[in-house]
Length: 520
Figure 1: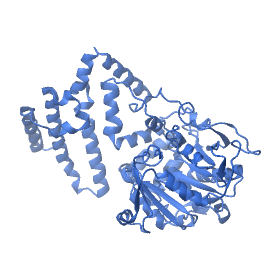
Figure 2 (figure 1 turned 45 degrees about the horizontal axis):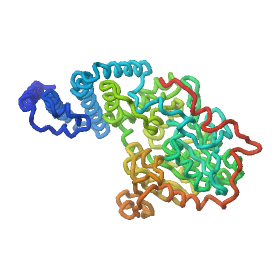
Figure 3 (figure 1 turned 60 degrees about the vertical axis):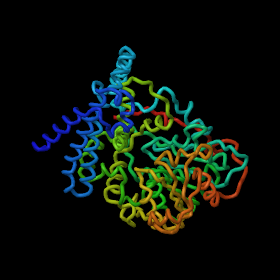
Figure 4 (figure 1 turned 135 degrees about the vertical axis):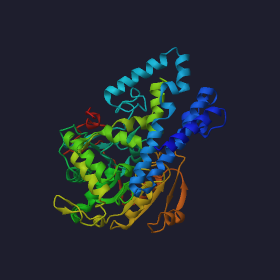
């Protein structure tokens, strides 16, 4: 920082201190909404000083203007991240709300906060976003009745008990991300996508990926494609006694499924009546917010840690995602849990989000290098899996791409490009909301969202949305109408999960989702 910059910073702070009673734009910031900030001279002074500091730091941030676009994006991100981290709200002595709370509780808020902080430091964990004692997987989460009907070292296959007298003869197989646990699709009765599908007369199977132990997993992308997705398709059809099924895959589960479909032989593809890719990138030309962490130097610098551990730790992935929206995902809970000592409220979606899973190291490196860094999935035959060339144009069954308007992880404008890459007819459905809130958590009985459908055959986002029909409500019923076209005839529902050759092994949600695995 130049002497001139330091002088400007000092002058602005002095001016702020002199006029601390003047209005401050930070007063509308959620971090400073408590009256302790705007209603006391100390709080007002802190707000003005932070405002002046922010302006000065943003001026310093202009040094990044000369950088190439990606480097400038990274520079701007870390400048803002540092500015948010240094907010006076994040420190006890400069948070008047925390000081008032400590006085009112005679120090009990401080004791509660310090106790939590020490416990989280021992676990190397982020501040809790939900009361971890309020939920139990298989107790009040993931409670839809079903059974594990097949398992190998990579996944358990769960089949659910039908909720209709008759079901479509072609079952639905759900492929969740391997970076998160499957039960986002089955949180509770009011939010469960699985239960909704069962009520619509579908026979539902879900993959539950195994959570790999550090140093204990050598599985690769190839293994997850062949021994994962391919095997799940085969076993779902065999157990259901069906010639084919409808596949729905989400996020990285979608990338795995695209890879799996892209290497299937004509005979193998006969088992897949349709494929739905839920918030899934096939073209990685726009990485969304994740692009901050995706470049050759950052990937190379992190690779030794991944190789040494044998996994990408789930907590590392969670921390990276939280950094993208730090004020909401980190500092809000930091202040609430540690400085204010408030009770942590229960929230099932945030509990699921914090229930992290490791990813095999080889699989992670393959994914970030070949897809995010080099965008090879979209190039015909640029990749090879167990000797088979990967060609997305090989995917010639009916497809549906579902994306969300506020998804900062998988930009919907980029998923639209999938329409020109798959070889078969492809529909596009756009819903309001985010990566989870607009898609997996969108029950029709509770949804206040809208969605767009029946857009023109174009990969131009503005033209597609302008020509599409906007409808009120959840996208789930619309998709159910679409998938019913390849669902087959209605037949009597199976009496119970499994078959004579493949009896139930254990009750859902199965043991893999419950395994306690080190995350660091």
